[in-house]
Image 1 (cartoon, rainbow, N blue to C red):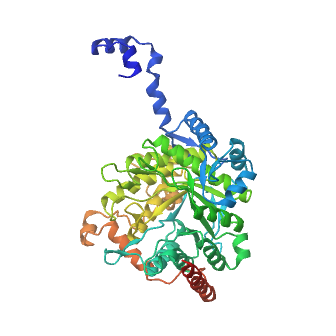
Image 2: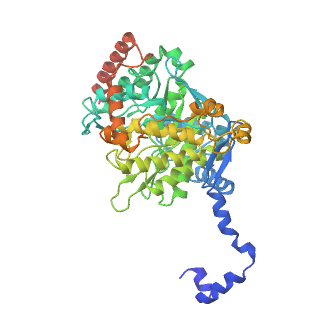
Image 3: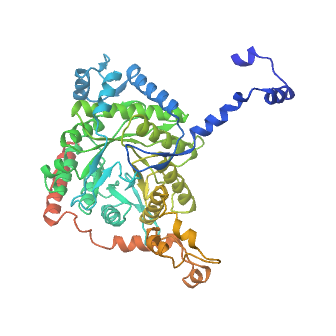
Length: 530
């Protein structure tokens, strides 16, 4: 029996009800606090447009998690598997254990890094046609395609297969023409050497897109070649440094470890001037404690370690906090990204990183645990998009991904593009003034009148969102059209886009030849040393 049970005698139900009735009014305040912690609130971030926000975390809870993050880094620290990085951190004031791996970060050093990290950046496209400002001026978000998936659902046949190099190029062409997709990540491709799959895949994506690209290295040796490819796609190393058309992910290895490969990615990306997506991938109940508060705390500490290392290597390195929170299905042992628990964890992590530490923030805003773009998929990604967007994320990742980020579906990507447009419209807080409330027209409306042909209606009707693939057909038109679904429309559009050549502004033939030479050289060097 716990301490509380042993200290107090058990009361009858009648006694408890009586106490509740006669208790002072202030004892009933607890539910109101809970409501305040999880309500929609208008928020103005750095003077930008006000948006509705959802908050699990009150200011007090954010302060608790911030303090614990600093304490965890100072008392436990992070294992850093990279001698040069450990030496640089030690020189900056971090304490290194005798094993040469565990690094304890003084709170002052972490705060110094947080103060120095840029609070806004531009993710550049190759021609400037699709440059992305973070945070977005309208207070909403950008989207990106899913990354790392090794499976592909053919939009023409609906069949699943291993993802190929041609599929990676198709993803790039698709992402370039979906207006809500801000930048494009490369998947895992089959049919090429596994150890250099990232190099082959990134070349295919960067070579077929005008938009910004996301680098995800698979080994430390590969990082150099990936950055070379990004430089060629950008029109040269100097162009890449002046206008970074690629950014790089660096992941912690939960719990509280940074691998050699990811540290090398941090070092080389920082020196090349590329923004870094500081990613934590904890699974609650597996690599992190099962409670979401603890999982979010661990993710925060790992991300702050990356922010601090980037600052030590190259002060003012742009870093985007990227908490990708998973939850363990305790029955099967699988990681889930769209369960109710994962949903709350992602939302909390975004709130902590964005509003607690003031970092630009990127998280899953799309995705599903189901293998196909079915009804479950639409429901799960609608929930995650709504929750994470309302939490204030600057980037919603995962467009097109299924089966917990292991499969890419072009049909699903088109549906996600539609959902993103709806969500951004939904987040745009309506203005309230004499014009928007049609005040003069309201005063003059006649008996049995209407506003269909009203001048006010004509002025504003084009501001309404016009869906691309979602249905708004009346029954007769729906039946006459053969009862199509939104998914049918999305599949048709995906096939049409994929059949088109790369969009204007993608690298030209000379750059593609040079990129192909880099891929061959990488294979020769890396596979020869493997």
